[in-house]
Length: 395
Image (cartoon, rainbow, N blue to C red):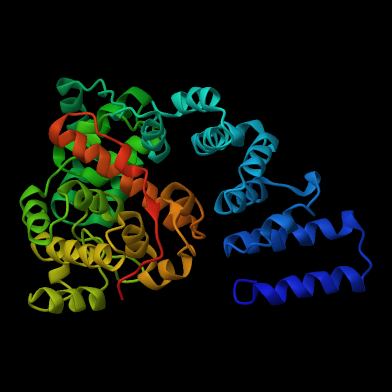
């Protein structure tokens, strides 16, 4: 279907006719086709979704039906689909935000404002957008963990955690993580909170953040959004004219501060650069071609990663959301996803067909807000988030 949506539509219609399928029998086939059409942002998606019986809807069908309606700016349909969602799905920040968007588009400004106000206090992409829609400056929610130096000292003295620390310092990440995970599982819950702080104290930011996430703890911003590479990030930001908060946001999302991170695709270092991408970027910047091992050095990786991000920002006419999508999925994919005309950025991002890339753009943008707040401790004017994606692209 991805390769030939028109052919898939024709085959579906011929299948229904040839097998003389009634509406109930055809519905499961319509569901599969409608989702694939929505993934391709095809105009027929909404029509095919109308052929799917309520009994054949699952979360994926609800979400992609809503996204197809958003792409078409079919606000009555957006409202109808979200209303039909199971309560657990409809109550997510994502769909509350778009329920408010639908209400606003239909002239129900009071209702829209009330719904936006329930989304804005959160710690995510939709919270910033809701604040922007309300015309309010945004500050991320924050709550420090109840860390105690003496209790962390006691934990540090325990042999399993001491072994994990020494393995981390000796740069044996696999063994260090294994030792940490075994030790962490054996701790009482209150001790696990102290362990999160202990890993942060060691500079083991990957494990501090990952362990906090396991506990559902996200709001100790000072602990969970460290800035250990300020010199490299500041220099790179200045050289390519990007905000340090954006570069740090990419580092946090790409590698969780692990300079020696290597992905299964051989993306390397803090900003997870493929060697070929790094070499091409180095040529453009007039820098030496990096070796594979050199890409594990922050002083090499960060300038090249920032330079590549700058190239994408320029290629996509200054549109940061598109540049971030290109950083994750490749610029050619983003070119395929461009709308025919201007489209609000929240609608475009929501229709990114790769779940990983959609989440990546949303999380990096969110991280950038947090890093900016940490730098100046001032609520951010969120109105610049309310931009349109345009199909203009610099080749």
